[in-house]
Amino acid sequence: MRKKFLTVGLILIMLLSSTCFAAEIVFTDIDNHWAKNEVYEMANKWVILGYPDLTFKPDESIMKTHAFLMFARLNGYFETENEAMIKIAVEKYGELLTNANILEANAEISFLIEKGVITLEDVVSLLGNGQEKSYLTREEASYIFVKLLGDEKNLNSFPLVTFEDANLVTEKYIGYVEYVNKINLMIGSDNKFDPQGYVTRAQIATILSRVDRIQYERTSDNVSGLVTEVDLLNGIIKINVNNEEQTYVLSRSLQVYDNTTKISKTLLSENDSVTAYMEDGIIGRIVVSNVTKNIYVKFDSYKTVDEKNIIKVTQDGKTFEYSLINNVVIKKDNNNILLKDIIVNEDIELVIVNNNVEEIIVGVFNYSKQGNIVEIIIGTTSYISIKDVYEKIYKYEIAQNANYDFDGANGSIYDLRLGMDVKLVVTHNGVTLVKVETLTNIEVISGTIQQVVPNLYVFFVKTSPEDIQMIFLDEEETIIITENGEPRTIEDVNINDVVSVYGRYENEVFYPLQVIIY
Image 1 (cartoon, one colour):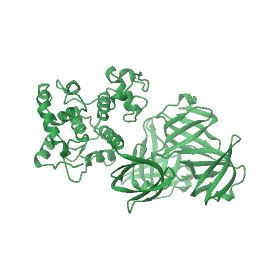
Image 2 (cartoon, rainbow, N blue to C red):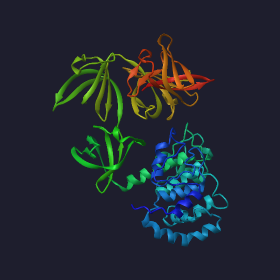
Image 3 (cartoon, one colour):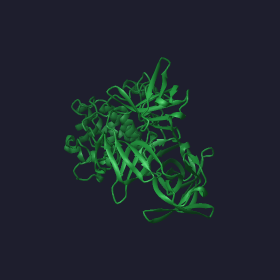
Image 4 (cartoon, rainbow, N blue to C red):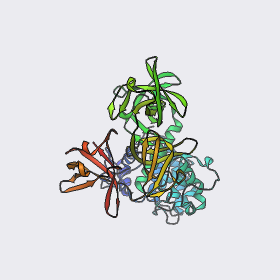
């Protein structure tokens, strides 16, 4: 798609509308912001433009007019092939918008109406009578985004039961709120949607990024399969599609997602389950959808078939076979061992990715895993999936006699909800304890280790030239891991280690939950 050349006049208009444009876009206030990647993604596509002082102001609420400017840009307002449509649109709707006292973004809104994204009546309802400088609410955003996707035909009339504050959603918007939640476009927080709350500039950047991804994937050719080889240097990827290895060229601007989270393309690896989207045969976007699960079984035997190791295991009296990846990691008592060293009937944990075993943990074990619940499956065999601080998803089988601790109170699996922060105790029998902690939001203390007192489970972190923070670890509950996920103990923490301590404040006391050593 060809882009219009931005003239001095257009740049001036952008500045006058509280935005700016630069060849190399850099905002000074989002370096550590959670939406940094999405903001820059949309900025580099000219969808979002910052302020003249080079800030983006990510946590400010978005004005409705500015939101419509972004909607138009995402729909091709800057593409040269739409110039004629824009001229026709302004002639048809410009004066009508002015008469409705909608004075800003006249051309952009006219373009959206002419393109069929939204009706004049909708625009007048949302922006007319002095509303154009008001802020966009979340329920209004859900309404517009469904229209941007052209998905109104997919709405249904089922009552909204997903959120605790469903009764606060304006009746007109109920189906739209339900739909954006179903497709993970706007997912709410703590089981609430906050329909009357205002959308921030960071949030709209994130949602626009998701809409752009959905639109791209709907209009592009795609293939799905397992990656057999990645060569980023030469821009080549090989994918096994229906048992046939196919070779594809990667775009220089390749974007890679782990489900819905954008990740570095360097994380692509052999055996990833992917869907690749392409235009003119060149892959521009890859979505990795690896299925990781942990199962707890007894070792039976192994064999080699076509240079591939196959492990045979038993679970509840049933026999299963799994293929091992070539560099499978096998550990016993934190030491690496060989496959032939596993004893028949030993308890083992298999870490399985896309039906291939990546790691084997041998023996009776007990460890903790912290994360956010993303899936609960209740059945004869129940499972829980959590997302950790690295945005990696783990799926665990829940033991039949598992305990559920809700801030010290007993509960059951039926009390769990998606989005809850939990700590799991994982043993060779599966998850035996699900501990739910509902204190304050997670805080992070980062710096370098200055002193360690192992016998007291204490270390000191220098967070700035003037500030040193004392961290008191809970011997049994605080999880210490390295950046690549290897478990550690307090004895493994050394002076000058770079660490991030994730925890919560309760009554001004900091309770660490997880320590990551870099």
